[in-house]
Length: 110
Ligand SMILES: [Zn+2]
Image (cartoon, rainbow, N blue to C red; front, side):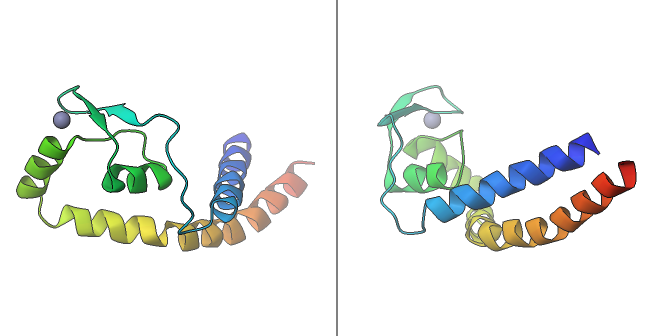
């Protein structure tokens, strides 16, 4: 039950955060630079990495590595951006499903 509660709390937190940080808001990473997760180069955030940061990513790739990555996996970027665009809806669905489950579990254990 603890895991479910933790997961539920995490989902609630994610939903609250996504509500607080409205889409299209100009939220910026606190630091302008990041370390490339692939080649360890310190690079400046671009609109692409800032977008990734807004979507909760903690690892970023420099332009060169991103270009290489795109060449090796041309369709993945579309899949990823599609997923991140829909993560808000999925979070709400998960919340709607999980909260009654948590309540039922909590009641069952008391
Ligand atoms: Zn790199």
